[in-house]
Image (cartoon, rainbow, N blue to C red):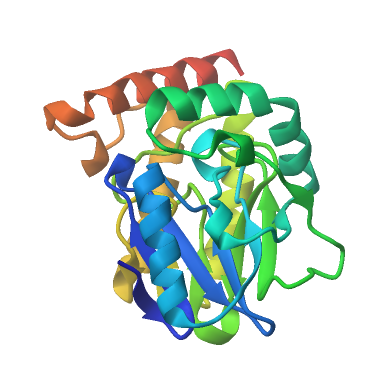
Length: 254
């Protein structure tokens, strides 16, 4: 079910890689951000939204990975916004995103995957400040709701997933460092941080998340083993070790 983590900001977590669906109240209604993952969960999310009694006026995708490009007809035929770069990449890779969605989950409305519109210059119905960067994916966006003390971080600052580089970009260490500089400044303004995957951070945990991602990137840059709890001994998380090795190889090749 939806949990209100700040005024007019609700989160619902999927069992699939601890994915967070986010609903934000704007001036004109609700904005649904990165909804997912299973079709049944999308339907339950629609039930939760119905109970809020506020209309959905828009959707938003933080970046062009399939699990952030989903939708459900019950959310309405409203614009689904993204940065211009995200919208372009999602459109070019729509068939691949649909295939990955079909392989990874059940009951997803595949005809609605990756139908994005570039966010207008005035921000349209989106509340807060859009912070665009290229870490993790081209066109990645975070949303700073400074008036509510909330940062919606996309696939950054997770407590369960290490930073993941984009293999299509050769400068991911530089891109991450630049993104962490910008997002770190935004994080100083908030008490609540919502990642795309993992638990919501509150209070001192916000600074801890910022420090953890910075320490990981610094270690990869130096070529040393990171002291990172996310790379622990849990067998179910062994795949993160492969991601880490890929990050290291990409850094050496940069």
